[in-house]
Image 1: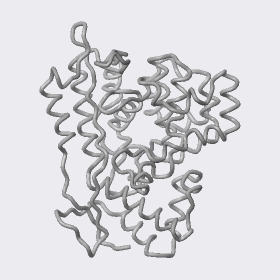
Image 2: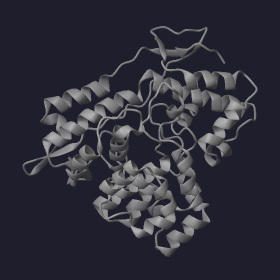
Image 3: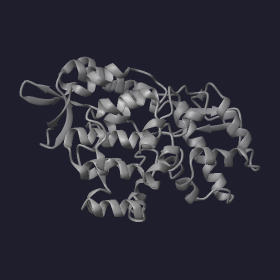
Image 4: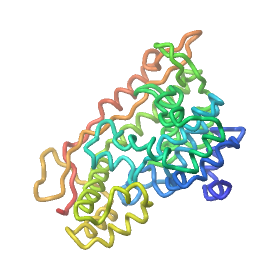
Length: 352
């Protein structure tokens, strides 16, 4: 476990300290060391976009890093082992290139097609099952983080998973640095467990000003998730995986068992359908091309992708209300996220 922490950049180590000022709870160490969790260290949270010059990521941030951070947030607010482990395991079934494989499966708008393997992977892990037995926890209590509203809830509510990727992506993990560690600290320290309009626990803000800041960053990130360069790249990687799978050059087991660097080697060594050549062109491209009409002579895609947005709660006197109900600034930012539009088609100058 200590080896894992030492591999993290000082910036990420400090970020983890913000999320859990008392440090990582002891019981988490053994779970993080299991092969199933360590495999996630080879998968970027960027859905593969980190490998193209169209994007400029501040640092490498793996699915393992994200999962540990989600677990730390849950532990900080609940001190519940079961909820914390559910958060740690929520992405244990993540394949290479992350949500790009949802695109491969045709799941553009919910991006949940890979989650069905979570229980299977945990159940088949001797190490994890042994640890759960040690801690007197059943698999049913930790295999679905949707059971716990502080861990996960429905859009546009704020839970630990949605909070974490907004914090880390805004720090630069997804290519847009929108705030620094001290700003994250101020935002995080303003969060508390509140009760929403359905009387369900939800993370919310103590102050309107901090909620507005969070919503502003969220809006910018929301747009970046559905930019044409992002949607194009995810569909492109999905199509490469599909073509290689059809040719017997990669298997479903590879998608879940190999690291992204290992799969990229397979792509770069591929001798069919110009796959290696097209991948190299995509890697070195700095700008996507867009069009209102399809460009049939090029590799051209048009995708309606999932809109990721948050309308957080904020404390007003003795009540908790949605920030867009009391802030015109936040309301405008949320509307910008929901109404963000791109050209209908995106393409690059190759065909495969």
